[in-house]
Image 1 (cartoon, rainbow, N blue to C red):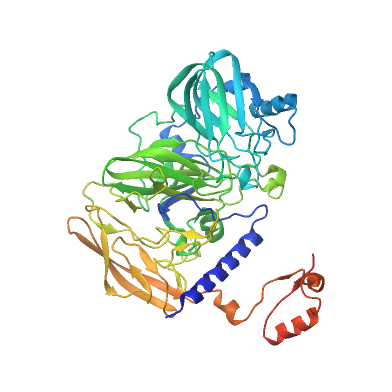
Image 2 (image 1 turned 45 degrees about the vertical axis):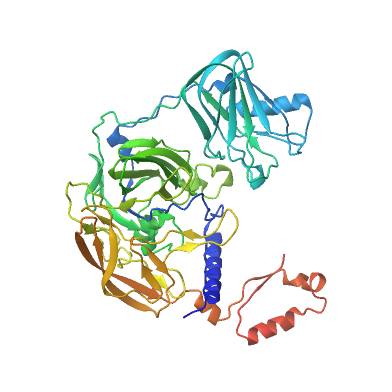
Length: 564
């Protein structure tokens, strides 16, 4: 058995290799694997369809953009209790007005001393207004101490009496944080916005723009309440002018085994030479709930995206952004039985601004997404089952859905043929958990087998063959452990049993390869030596770069210098 220490070193090296790959590939920014609240798993197996020229789901559901609401903040007077690097009263008031001028390019930024706490922005109106929704963006800052977890919104009447208060969701520069009251609040003359601290650190928070509305945004629901989209593997999806099949998709079958990102750009553009730029892409899954219950759908996608649950739009088209986990969080109700989750992504990309940093806000180079179902704290909801087939047909027989990519795979598609993710020696199969004590780090949900039909409440076991040594199959269909076996193929037969005792079997196989970073270790390949010329003055006055190079070469290292 390999030692835990060696496994840890192996994973650290692999993370370094992956991080270096990202740095070399991204032309404008570095994408980091964001850590998120709660332990709810991410969904990694979907049916996908696309690319489409037009928004097929919007057309099928007859979704139109909601009527534009009047932003009452534009009619307010604004006053901040501090402004960055200035305490002049006139300038403080002027700075607050930058948060209600209708432009995100100007912003109110507060001053950091503890003597000016809490950081507040106060809006007042000459004549009372009605308020049901308040939305605000967070300032665009790379310092996490400048960011807020939420904004406390307090509504007052003309007599300066508190009417109601509420906290927004977590705002960012790209996505608003908002608070929506159950009913419209009348006779509002003042709103006090108080910034909430981020992890106890509070430097210079700010707001680029505040919006105040008399009513909440109208929910976009199909004009025909009976309109449904029921994806089936291999069947066409689309409109009268444009149809494409639903395909089985799991990024981990060829690509990112150690992150929960679903890479549609890689699947279409790279693997199949099908451009996705300025096109619409779709991902769908079925979610079984043993009872009717409240939940949250958490999605983050590159470009602009919409989310539909059980044929109702719960998230309208977002502003185009680079992908991160849990960009939007929406409360939903899961019905008892199979539920539908559909994500519509518009890959907003234009070649002429590919490298123009001043035009990159809506120009998203890659296309992909994260998605999961959670409770209100981001944690796993017990009893949920995921499937690409669900139970669209009543009394459908029990079947195992886990399989290979694409419904009608062609020989020249450059897609792998395996029906299980590749395993790598000494690495986890294929989960990962970062030990980094910060907001970013590698994370991957455990691979889980999927079934549909029958009576959910599925349990799994292997009836023939065996898994690679070190890898285990749990009763719930998840895989655990490190691959501790030699490279090769490991075929096995898996059996699922539903809650009524019905069974279904399927032959699967795990292909094991040598972990790629082993070649680096055995070849004694060194890292980049940066600024080695300053060692004599800053580190060791007796240091000799020539002697170091001779010794490195004799030991089989490869290297190069960089001065700067």
